[in-house]
Amino acid sequence: MLIREIEGATRHLGAPADWDQSKAACDVLPIADVMTESGPFMVSAWSPTAEELAALNAGAPLYLWIAGSSHPVVALNVGETSAAQAAPMQPLVVDSNGVIRFKENAVVRHLIDNGGIDMNQLARLDFSDEDRMQFAQLIGYSVSGYGDLNYVSPESRDIADLLSGKLAEGNRAPIDVHQQEGS
Image 1 (cartoon, one colour):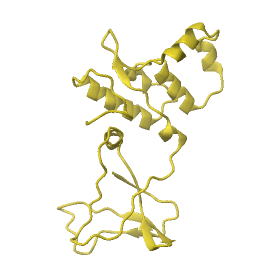
Image 2 (tube, one colour):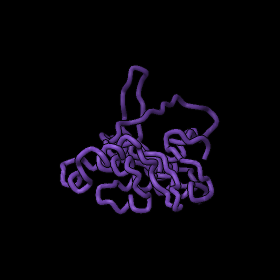
Image 3 (tube, one colour):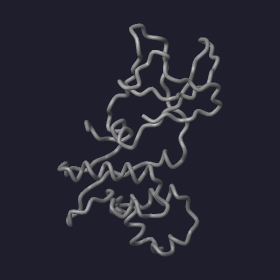
C-alpha cells in the first residue's frame, strides 16, 4: 500500500519514539483530524499498488494490522475515485496467434463493421480518454499495444500488463479483473 497525502491534512505522524526502523519501516503518515458523532478520528489515505489492486479485484481480502495487543476502534472505507480509476477493464484472452488481447465485444465489433463509421472517423471525434481506453478494450486491442496508446492511463496500463503476465504464466483461461477467483 502507498501512503497518500490526504486532503485537509492537519498533522503528519512519524514513527513512535521506540520504533526500530531496521525491523520494519514506519513512514510519515499525513492525517486529517475529523470529529464524528462517535468522537474524534484520525483519517489517513492509502492507495494500492497495481498488483495489490489486481489482487483485491480478484477477491483477496484487505488486512488491517494494529501494533500492540489491544484493538482500537477503526474504520475502513473507500474514497472517491477519478474517472480514469473507475473505468472498467475487459477480460483478457489469448487469440489464435497466441496474442494476449482484451476480449472483444461482439456488439461493438458489429457496429464498427456495419455501422457506417470507420476507425479513422472515430479517431477524429472528441471523446474522453476514459471512453477511448474502454473502446480500445471493447474492440479487442492487444495488451502489448494498449500501453502505447497516448490516451491510456498508467494505472490502466499497469493493471492490463499485470493480468497479461498472469495469463502468460500458464493460465490460458480468460482473466477478468472483476470476476477472477484466487490469484
